[in-house]
Image (cartoon, rainbow over all chains, first blue to last red; front, side, top):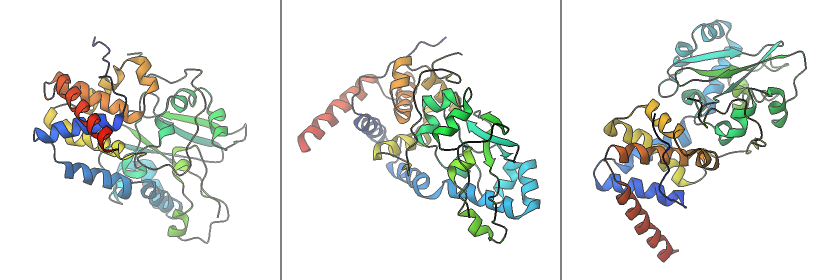
Length: 199
Length: 106
């Protein structure tokens, strides 16, 4: 049984990070340029617009939607979205009867290739604690009120398996192209705490 | 292990307060802390599970009070010092050195 470890007294996290990075550079163990690339990738290249492409395709192409529900990892990989923190994916579909929400009660597990890095609230204690016991109350905090008759399913992510919500296609969007549909898909609708924008 | 990280169903932790138009990183140091995981785990020889376990073993009060990337820093420091890759003394000395520089210049 490991003992709880305290960190060194550290008032300023910025200095704490610089100290560790500097020491590792001095020892020749890391290359700061490699860190620059990682930061740039997750700040600018990987994010919820990836997931929006997957959702818009599923709304437009019934065969793709079926592949996505049958084997999400492979169907998402068709876009080239795969790898770190998205090795095993499952897509859960919202219907008029069922609304899905995703959480990671133990930590912060989240599908990076389709949604990017998680927002602070997703990793925070209040969301992780409450969404499993009072999902309707939590949805209200996000401004979403569902009918009492809607069944709510909360999916607790694990280190191995990551979930993506397939929201319902908004009404009146029959004439929209896949690209136009993509613009309606929000990050929150793919976590399940929001709905897509209306057309 | 039913540690402080096992938060599902706990009461009294307050409102969620989602931040509109939240940036990926709230300060440059968060990005650096994020990058340190991929930059260190191979040469330091730890796994994602061990990293998470290090966070779960944080002091429980500190766990609840500190931010996400501070959790990561706590885990890096634990994993790298227990392997002897850096020492607590080296870290403390470097922090002191950088704090002095910061105070001098700004």
